[in-house]
Image (cartoon, rainbow, N blue to C red; front, side, top):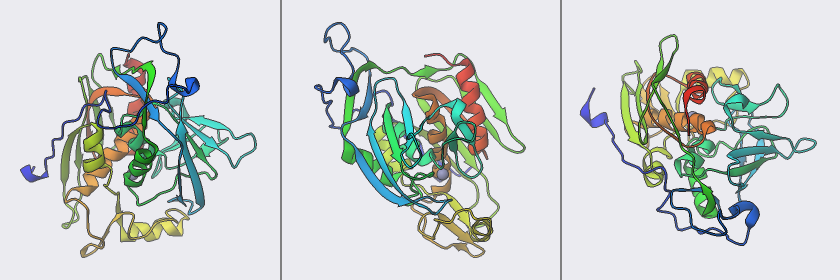
Length: 318
Ligand SMILES: [Zn+2]
């Protein structure tokens, strides 16, 4: 494995400290009640956003126009989607139990009722920036694709600002290794005292090749090193998907598109594709809340991510 493919980036996940947002202490619903009559918490605090932020766009797979509002969330509430276009505005919590589908993207929902599709890049941005609680309102079944990465969501959340909450951050940790093996893919989670991902992406296309990257997550580095990475799209696959009625919101700007001769749109990093695999993994594991583990992925994708999240939830404590 070529050394220049390696990336090792150190990040502190507990403390989203390079943000300047301040809690709105007067808002008890969001900020929570200070324990012990207003004492400061000694450990890391939960984080939400300071004010609502809005983004309009189209869904990648549905091609439907969507307006999204990300709003502050209560302590210990995690990430909750709300389908404002449906009767009664049903809520769908981002949880292991609510992972409904993992074909091409991750869909959350319960028993075929309200669903929300392609949640992974937004959830990665939230988790990658150290946000614990947020409410995401959508007037369509799919999160906007933006530029195919998490960069637009990071910008959106930065505009909203960070708000520490009067509740301690609960970080899951593993007592032992767990793993999932697919047909020709593997995903392992090892006990660790940070959140770290090592990933191997393999590909036979001479212009793409095999890619390896390793990251220890922290907010500043997520924004710079992972958030801008887009997914790979092979021209022949994109055409086939669109014939099936998928990837309808797709175009050459929202993916690293590869044709027979090579890249059809310039990559943002030499190893953009493996960075996007890490982005997807961070988003898919965000249903667990904050986690300390070393995740090692080989050729894995959304389906294995969901199975690993379930295994981690079974054994982890925090
Ligand atoms: Zn993705």
